[in-house]
Every structure is written in structure tokens, then in C-alpha cells.
Length: 191
Image (tube, rainbow, N blue to C red; front, side, top):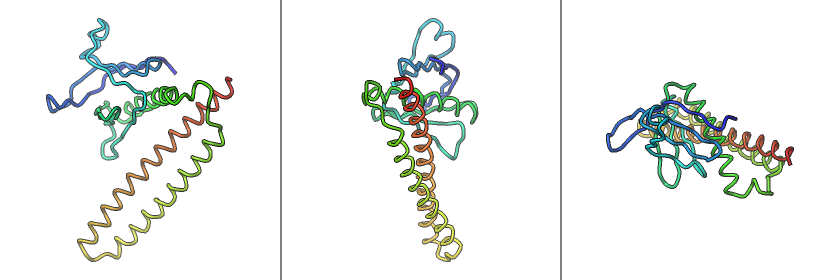
């Protein structure tokens, strides 16, 4: 994992009520995502701001394949990549960084490392919840097919949407647990 990833992203600003182009630098070791008004300003060290990644949570929007959010310390930052691939690269690098610094925060890098069994147990639990929700989605589809009442239909569709976003969240958690398990196993082997 390179210690730094950099490149252009757009950042939503409430002041201008719009997307602003910025040059971002992800420092894996420091756990910071810094941004500059341009690559040139970055070269001169004129930083516009930064996002501390320890304990941060990444959010993605299923409706849009290029945007994502970082929520940390009760603040949410909105970003837009060029396309889905670019977003995927950033999210992967950000999650690795968040995981590393969050494990440090919990003291997991200084002695205690969850066992592979701990991760397997949580992965099994998460997978069971995922299956329950997927079953629930099928039930909603059946109900929608037989539903004649518009009011009832809207309620079911709202429930289906909520369940769908929960399914996506759990899938995301499973991926994070798998990354954490891989990092944890690697750490155990290194000790």
C-alpha cells in the first residue's frame, strides 16, 4: 500500500452551494486526506484543508456511481470522482487508511488483535442478517405483485427501499470485516 494517493476530486461546498474542483492527497501514515485548490498549490504546500480519517465512515449513494461521503466528528464531507472506477480506488484507499487508524485508536495495534475466529463469528452474523433481509426483499416483491391499494403499495415500496439500503450497508460491512480480518491475520503472522 503506497503511503500517499493523490488526484483530483470535486468537493461539495455549502458556501458556494456547488461542486468545487480540488487536488486531494491521502496520507496513509498520517491518516489525513488533505486538499488544495490545485496541484500547483499542493506543490507549494498551500493546503486548503484536511479531513482526519481516524474513526471516519465512508458512505456511498447507490443512485450515483461517482459520489461518496466521509463522515467524521459529526461532520459529513461530500466528494465526486470522475467515474465509478475512480471512486472505487479512492474508497478502497480511504477504507484501508481508516481501518489502520481506527485500529490504532482502539489500541488494537499495540498488543490486542482480534483472532481470526472473532472475525469469522462477526462475518457469519453479518451474513445471516444479510440473508434475512434478502428474504424480506422477496416477500416485499410478492406483496407488491398482489397489492391493489396505492397507499399500501407506497408503504411497501418505501420499506423495500429502506431494506435495500440496509442490504447494501451490510454488504459494505462484510467487505470491511474481510479487510480487517486480512489485516488482522497479516498482523498476527508478523508478530
